[in-house]
Amino acid sequence: MRSFHHRRGSPVDLGIAHPITLSCHCGSARAILRHPPHHRVDVELIENTKTYEHESGKTLHFCPVCGARLLLTVHRHSPRPLVGCIEDPEDVEEGVWDIGITRETGSLVETDKLQGSCLCGAVLFSVRAPRAEDHVDGWVKEGKFATGLCFCRSCRTTTGAPYWNWAFVPKVLISVPRSSTACLEEYRSSENAVRRFCGICGETVFYKNDVMGKGVLWDVAMQTLHIPEGASERDWFIGLYDGKGEALDIDRYIEGWMEGRPSFESEGWEFLGRDKVDNIAREWREKWASSR
Ligand SMILES: [Zn+2]
Ligand SMILES: [Zn+2]
Ligand SMILES: [Zn+2]
Image 1: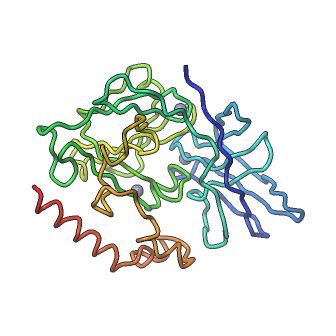
Image 2: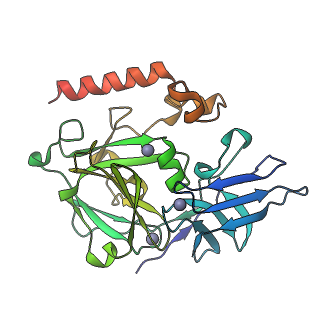
Image 3: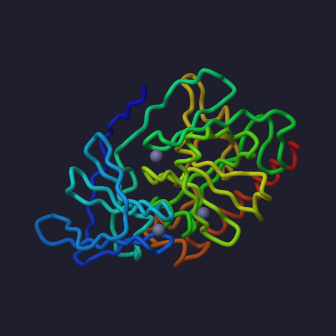
């Protein structure tokens, strides 16, 4: 029996006086929000979106072509933009990605598998723990999968999130039942990349890149995976950026946000803090090399 818990979302203060535009990666869905006086936000335009209504009264508006979530409305009011799809993030003092809906963590019958699901539960899948023979240099070792955060425009505008957390999993370890495959929509976000998202709630679940992952790895959206009670994320994953399997300390390397710079696109590597990224990447490579 599936049920979803409701969590209080963070307050949203758009802090802007002029309209903002939200658009998805494929360009077919769009929304324009206005912020008139009296702390109200109005939707001026919303086009080509599909909605997913959650029992909590919250509605997600997402693009049916690329899966991007543009905004969330609460009981059909209070539109909240999802920052990854805001066209000019420089003008937004505070946006929201915490959509205030959490999914059930579920319970596992098999201890060597992680269960995964999208928000609405239409897409269900499992990931089997890697064994010695599943080792992939740089990605899978000692029974753990590497994970990484991505801040690229493609990830942001296909999800609505300000960044995306991926786990890198060999496709052979992922099982998707046929009923769930039928709910997965495909979107080719670049020449070599295919993203798969739930056609009902819009949640991005998988990413495959024929060049980077050599067709072997699928990236799995971390938030879709349920860590069983009594286990910890570190039992399964190693963060690519901290290399220790510790909980990711985002502040450690996102200087851009800490200092109020607008985006990766406008700032390039400086946004993340070039030195930090180089250092962390080097540490990570050395760690992998020395423990091979
Ligand atoms: Zn789209
Ligand atoms: Zn779904
Ligand atoms: Zn990305």
